[in-house]
Image 1 (cartoon, rainbow, N blue to C red):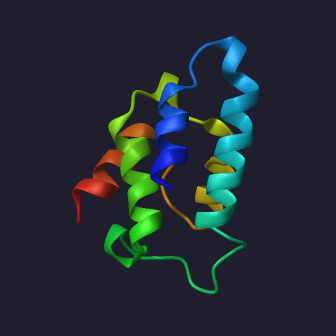
Image 2 (image 1 turned 90 degrees about the vertical axis):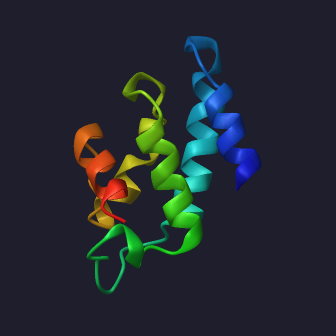
Length: 92
């Protein structure tokens, strides 16, 4: 997971968009599989891997976000707007 996050952090610019898409899609579908039976009520309800991915997004400017994985966060009812996500992580 750390290698994938490092790869995402380095995938900038249009020429790397395919790499960013593939990495984000794979990472987010592994860490946030399917729709949960019950959505987490807080950041603390996420497992360690999920918390790491959410924290990674919260710490990055939105122009560096791998948007291809945000559907997974929406299924899990995790905020996807940057200020909301930062507040979500900060509430832990």
